[in-house]
Length: 533
Ligand code: F6P
Image 1 (tube, rainbow, N blue to C red):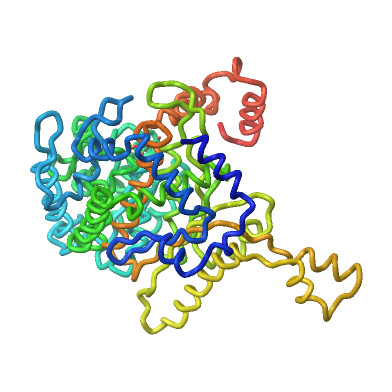
Image 2: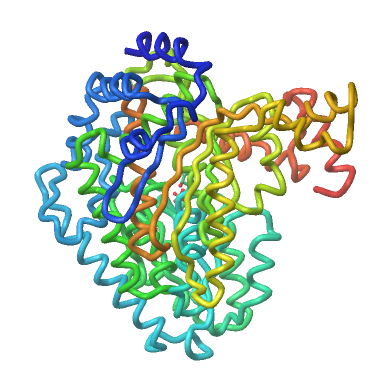
């Protein structure tokens, strides 16, 4: 199938997208669930290409693997684990069995405990030494930070709880900046770490503990933990009543639906959090039931595969015209690149096709005044994914929102249509003539034919955010299955961690840099000369 797709691409590569784009295509090259619409009409995928891409899904057994995932089979084969973040939002979906046991009673019990704690914090029933909690600090990194941090920002209009801060980086500038603005006597610290061993998180947690200890007599009383490692949270001194556990079948970057979402729940309240879960659950059901051509996650994955593995475009830009989604690109970088950035297939053989793409982006319209120059006129094609809401949350400023939407639609149109040399000449014919007109006009040409997709929705509510995140999670799953890789391990982060541990005493000046490569030794030398040790 890969061969057929590559041959098909070669045959159509120079075709202009806009020449295909009549009303029939505009109605056909979309997928919709509820009020969410994925438009991929502005790509070079035609009916034949789409059929070949859909055949890839069948060839890879995506439906069987999807059903295996939802049913609790150990599809994370390198770690021998089930992959069941979907169970965390299975609010009314019946039993989910892992090793012969229904996991739902525990999932729902933990959700109820989180809700009760969140309500206590929000109402002031749970107090710090100085009274009602005014600030919550979530200390975590990667999946224990990016999801809740992104979602807390996205749902800012629903935020009616205490102020919520996220500390992730081991760079002391991160935690110092947050602590400076908080009163220890009215702050709750949530240590979020699946393993409770991550060096950045544990270092920051101890820093927060020391900071609080200067004012608060019982610091443990103002700490909570989100982790699978109950022994380690106990050793840290956190009361089991404020420890919210989850099973190893919840991957770090898929974990914000459960305890890792506690800070978000405290910020927006249990009702909005449940709405977020319901939105994700509705996308799960759509992914399980909709035929491929109508299936948003499947089609988004196939568009990704077309652009990355078939056309050879190595990156994709995620461009939310929704400022509340400013952290979505960073969140997706972990979700997509930690999941599908693998060089070997499930059976350990080298991949014979490219792994997942580089994902990057910024909200529009900001990006337009920064990197869009390259997207429009650079020599490499960068497929773009636009996200846009029909309405913002600022009813009194709706005209400003209309300008935002117009910009979003204009960008995908400009990328596709471009501007010909003739049109460019027309733009400057009144200012230049002869050879200078030619030269000036050439700078104003846009080759166009640059593909994009648009995900449109009515408004960024908690339900819609849940749908968007679940859409991307399942897209990653589909791409991973088609590439034949395990999207649920992350061995590629290990080596750097090991070397950092070994380098710490060298940086501190307790061990010599002998044996390190010349560049590393020289950098240690330079940094030591300037005060690192
Ligand atoms: O280093 C990568 C990673 O393991 C991610 O996969 C994970 O989300 C992050 O570190 C944090 O891990 P933990 O929640 O165990 O602290």
